Image (tube, rainbow, N blue to C red; front, top):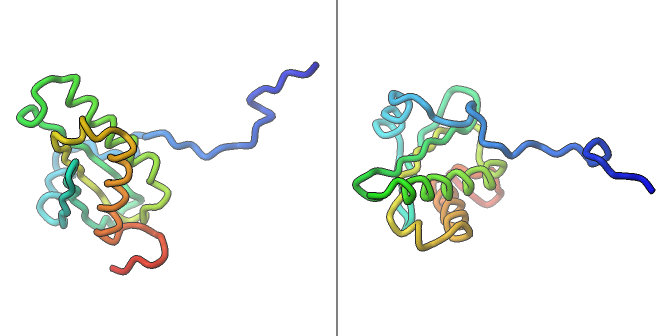
Length: 134
């Protein structure tokens, strides 16, 4: 009887949400708001700007005005981060995104948030899939 360990599994590309793919500084958020384009959906608003730097980075905004309870703010941010993490491979590697959560995201759930995220980035022309024109 042999035990199959992690070393026997095929290597997998990491889908973690590393620090290098996050917008962290206020000036980065402000640059996206000042110079970027936006598109609104039912559960989120995406601001996007081309970036001369490395790859796609993302920041999330879930305001106290929209989500009074901290648990709701955290859930909204978690849903958006997961949608980005799942769809990051489809994005071009040359843009920064700031995603502003709307109240409806709490009722929509993870699958709907992911579907809307993909729909909005396609509308912005930020996916690498064929058939999308800039």
